[in-house]
Amino acid sequence: MPTTIENRDWKKIAEDSLTNFSVYKLDRPILPNDSILFLFSIKSRPNTVYNRYSDVLENGTYLKSEIFPRFGYFAETEIARPENRDALYNHYQSIDADLIRFETIVSTSQDQIAIAPGILEAEWIEKGRAYFHYRMENPFKFVFGYHSGRYITYSERYRGVECKIYHHPAHTYNLPQLLDGLKASLDYHTEHFGPYPYKQAHIIEFARSEGSYATTAGNCIPTSEIRFVNDKRVVQRGGADLAFYVIAHELSHQWWGAQVIPANVLGAPFVTESLAEYNTAKIYEKKYGRERVLKFLDIQKNRYLSGLTTATENEAPLIYVTPEQTHISYGRGALALYTLSEYIGEEKMNAALKNYFDKAKYKAPPYTTSLELLHYLKMETPDSLQYVVTDLFEKPGSEILLRYMQDACL
Ligand SMILES: [Zn+2]
Image 1 (tube, rainbow, N blue to C red):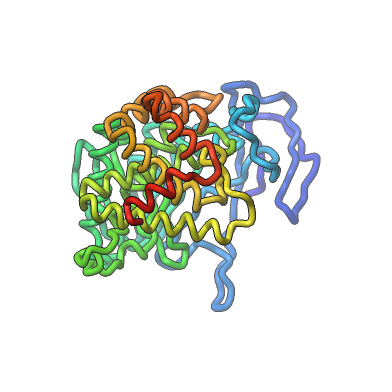
Image 2: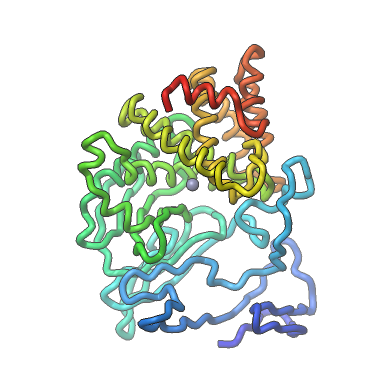
């Protein structure tokens, strides 16, 4: 099927087949709340023994939303500072969509399950293929995936949410840890900040060949196979429970990233990744105790300090951190927020985050920024400790943080 627009007169005025960039001129402009019907098709180039062209696999396909055409010109420009009010009208994960309403019908081989964000409204077999119809309950960001594989499921209802894991039949070692991470994160965030926005939370295993990460998309948490085949004896001996931690972190993004959505400016990862890491550290502490959370913060310290040794640019303050500086947003961010909670207490810390959450959640453009988060942290900090907030978040490097790491024997 060629690319075409159905309900509007249009003409193509330019096409660059090398970069896959085309310019279409519509007879009338698209107005706010207007719609056009855009039809297109995408082909998968089969993989060979030697070359990997496609994410369509025999078992374990994982297609990301980046396969879809996007609208507009995606320039690689420098990210603006959060003080720039004009830059706050796009959020940190897309420039051509704020939040999207989503409904999809996906088909796959008859012996596989296809999964996409949303509630499964119907499934059927037609001409030897299995069809699945999903619809998202609420608008969400245009960042998601389609999965297909010979999955089996493991599930439990918790706090009114259907918690389900889609996994390879043999990968059963870490299912209780993964589910515990989901439940502990649901408990913590619901109690401190507000309800989970969906009726379902689905963890979906994807192949190691696709990566070693996990991510959040609508009500789905696509998670690498490596989190399903951890040696449980490591945890029993006091090592880090990464299966628990990773899922607790990803679910945290349902509050910090999905409900509170920062603008596409410097400091956005302080709002998403630093807050997810801090809250996950607290969840981990509740599950495993003080001694083991300090061990976990030690991993964050190593991430932070080793990142500094290989960084090619000067260290940024947390409120101006870039998406590439993950040693700062994750490593230093988790440590700095944890240090502040030691100074002002967990109760005040949670009051600051709750006030910020209430102010920023589902905020229409202009989107929130790290400066707004900083403001709420300062509001709950006594005058005598304001210098701590300044040192931890507004300066590159932090003497207070280094001293805290030493005192805590990190
Ligand atoms: Zn994250």
